[in-house]
Image (cartoon, rainbow, N blue to C red; front, top):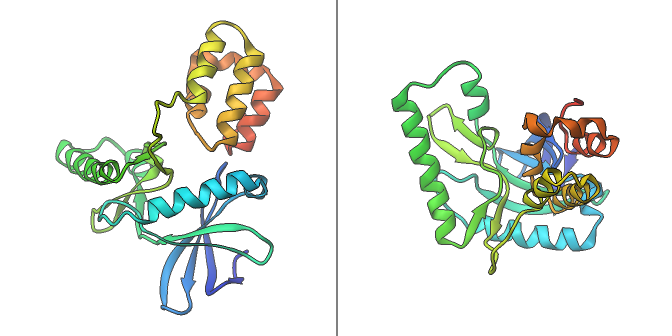
Length: 224
């Protein structure tokens, strides 16, 4: 992928990956600027219903203009039908990387929190919610500006109970087959709450079931 030109973007470097796609640094040849391109896995974009829903959600998220939200510029696809999103490219580090180096000082932690909440407030005012707020999806630029990344979605018109919630209920009831079905549903719908189950020691028994192990692998999580 590195070195290729897709549309008017020249791929320069791979800067991230996970169960929901790979992210590359690229140069916009027309505008002479750096951007980030997120390519979604073929296993997801080959599903017509998912692809259409994703495009609608991305368009909604692209309508947000706020200093603390990563800007989406366009959605396109490569010659081999890989769907990708073009976003702003930032120099800096994620909050996950930052806190791995040590505890944040209170003033800095407060500043990051305020900026993050300002971005979420703007999204909520537009009827859009974030489905996966975590340190890995909070980016801090070299200028100390917080940027919220990924998983912005239009708010549902009715109450939504996540597949992960149902999965936990069935795990507690020792109904593993039902739990797996809900976990799989969450993965296919691009919800990520099942990742919490992966890290929760109370649910470590699932590592003995190859179905769950395979699902975790597909989500880009380390093999337990």
